[in-house]
Length: 430
Ligand code: EPU
Image 1 (cartoon, rainbow, N blue to C red):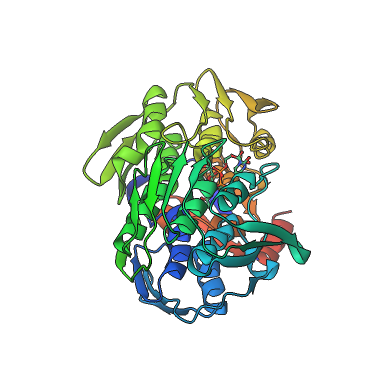
Image 2 (image 1 turned 135 degrees about the vertical axis):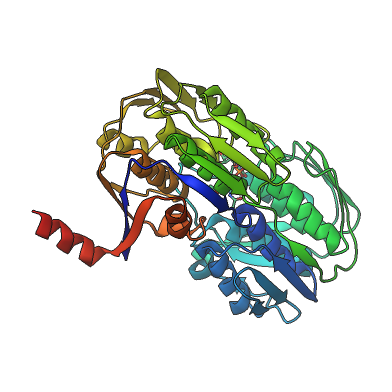
């Protein structure tokens, strides 16, 4: 067990390279189940969610070969179509992509309910309805296992009640080898949905319209292996943009798709930050004090909920009153109480947070409640005067490759410390 220790107050300066997208690669890894052939995935982020997903695939019979730190070759020819137990799925939400992928390959699937960050109730009714429309009979078995079964999965029109990323991806996985045509209406348009469509098409699928409201899938009989590079992580890039801005720094962020960053860039510009876009990089340069702004999180291309906590931290010291409305989840403001411990002046009422910008934050012991809340604590620690100790940092490792190394390269005073040493240090200081 480790804590992250940050001595704040230093502007970030230099260059940082973004890794492959977590939420894309988890869908891609699941999709490898659909072909009895080898898929090679490059730009693989070295994060714990990926390690766990590779472990799950290996446990289920896939031949998984890591190639260096950032690539993997996977062959699922001898994949096991039995139950995927809770022991394997409990770690993160994307494990439910195995439902769509197994159903797509075998016509049946038995997968335990997924884990994932706790932002309130996170139903999967849209996934289930989609599977039913494709011909699955769905039952809920002991040990939280969801079972899908069909003689012959068949394409169908599927209208989603909300543009759910997970449901869009799961239905795509289930439909690519089904007989006939599937049309997903009100589909999610996130960059990772498009990345999955591109990956499936390089495996021989026929998926069109990804990135728009309507995704059309003509089922094909077989898929084959492919070589593919994951897109860069929009949220990791946004997190470094926010960190550079929050510390009054100047950072060139490499390996980004600027188009994916538009909603984040727009808000930084509103706060008085200079953002310059190049082909595959973005330069962020910030004044000493940022200006207030208003944010409402929405499905893509709106401002992403996964960037809300990082902006919560950044706005804690912006001049004036900022307002954040959370439009996706019921309960994603838990981290705000940690910012208040650090001197923030913030009131939360349901899904709205009102932030009165204070002069500065002060270092404090805080917790990473979940992945992005953890990223917010890192940014708050970088901004704050004094030392911040962040506990429960395993959440941060789920989605950020070597965040300590990358920030240290940018001039941050940041390090990891075993929890026991951290306690001893505090005793000595007393
Ligand atoms: N929803 C339903 N029913 C459903 C599906 C979703 O009511 O069947 C609701 C959810 O409760 C939520 C909203 O619809 O209020 C959106 O959920 P969505 O399905 O789009 O989210 P997800 O697929 O569970 C993915 C990302 C999340 C990200 C959201 C929104 C992955 C593995 N996870 O979750 O990423 O917040 O989309 O963009 O792709 C993160 O990376 O930190 C993270 C939490």
